[in-house]
Amino acid sequence: MSCALYQRVLFLISICVRIGAEMEQTCPTETLTEMSQKLNDLWATFLNGIPLESNPNRTVYATCHLQPNPKLAAAELQITGKILFKQIYPDGKLEVVFSAHGFPMDVNQTSRAIHIHNYGDLSNGCDSTAGHFNPHSINHPYHPGDFGNFRVQNGKIQRHLTNLEATLFGPHSVLGRSIVVHKLADDLGKGNNQASLENGNAGTRLACCVIGFTTSSSWDKYIQDNAKLKSPKVSRHVSSVRRARN
Image 1 (cartoon, rainbow, N blue to C red):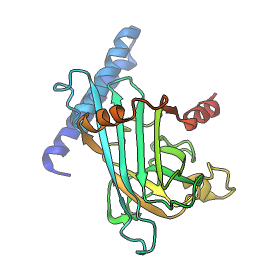
Image 2 (tube, rainbow, N blue to C red; image 1 turned 90 degrees about the horizontal axis):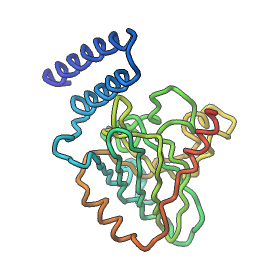
Image 3 (tube, rainbow, N blue to C red; image 1 turned 180 degrees about the horizontal axis):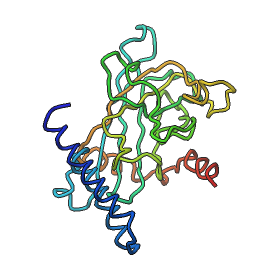
């Protein structure tokens, strides 16, 4: 961590401590809400660098360019693609478009798992991304980046999910973390072993990428190209998580 960044983090922590102390005192609900908003703004500005001042509609976009895992044998599937993110700051729910290519053309209706992993480190291919991003220390499949299974059709995955639990904002932002496409389907925590509760036994890491900021151009092009298609699909995972919490 650079000296400048370290100082900014210390400054942010000191402000958070002071605001937290104020919030423990008797305060109107409106004041608590305002303080919470200020904390979110601080996280966004100092740690994530969200350009709120130059973005009048307060919509943040991110992208992740999938590349094959260089640690795999040459005969393994060569998966490429792009994953797009969109979220309105500060209260909007995350939308994600998944587009991946390179799967066998002669095998349709198979499913592949896609997850957010903890590190945006590709120095050792997809293996150095570590395990699932799990800020709340809970079991799979309830991690915020447990997107579930994606059906392959005509050699590719194409899907648009809305109302997702992951976020581009705040202390649990997924910016700078990674997306991993797996060879197998996710068992959704029903595999009766420890690996099932950690990663869904999804198998080999076929492709990966790091999530980073971008402009709205790729998202706008996707919407334009798919304007005649049916409405976006809502993530089944989100519904299952909500049921589990109720």
